[in-house]
Length: 363
Image 1 (cartoon, rainbow, N blue to C red):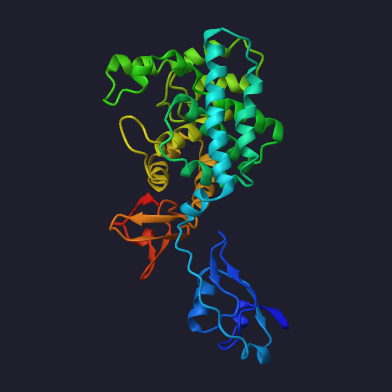
Image 2: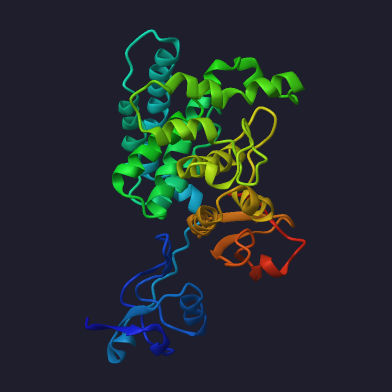
């Protein structure tokens, strides 16, 4: 049968779709053989489908509409069901164990460890994720993984790598930034495990000990043959641009760019991961916290880039709203990234105009 490609706005009632139409996440919207009507055109417009393929008008009448195909899986479920995710999850688990073995040997000085070689772990996982966005898809869907310094460090390394690409770093610099993310919390291995995993609020004495981990980490690597920017990130990733950080209450340009990037990746992963003392926060709650409090504490240029890109990473994800309704994120609000537009069963909700409504959790 002959067919032709037309712009969606040229579609007329009675035409017949000659090729399946999918949205950006691979979900089938309109099946081959479907007759175009007002509802179909509305759906194509809603998902910003620019072009479609239709049968010639004289043939269309002879084609029986195919029954609609409904994909009941959420975006998250489709990721979890994919072979790529299964490979990523398996590799993630193996790499956490390998990183733990290697870095513990280094800290305890029981064997020779080439710190630069540690980058093999995150890079083996990045090869599985074919886009920077899919890194967040993968990390977001690894549920209930033991929240240890080792898994957190691997997460931060991956996020730093993505940020490096987003802000236009050269590949050599991205490699060093990834290693900075991997090693940023090495000093925590000197802090007693029972303090790090304590479910109750830390005492003042315990918190002061935890706050020493950047210095302890720097002391471990200061004589190693690694990029000075990595050492700086280990020492300063808890410093804040407004001087409210630790250990030295530095401000602005006295904090290196690697340290500023690691700081954002570190806090994002920490807040979106389950801790002994709280559940994981919804990514859009974390984005809101960054919007409310972050522009004084973090490098504005890096943070804006990160928030815009991370918001895009969750487009097409299914969410539950605070009023119990469920829907799909379809559009970001540039001036309110924590409040995107949600497609729900009975229409569309613009959270930027619904101040009493928020995304409660990702599904």
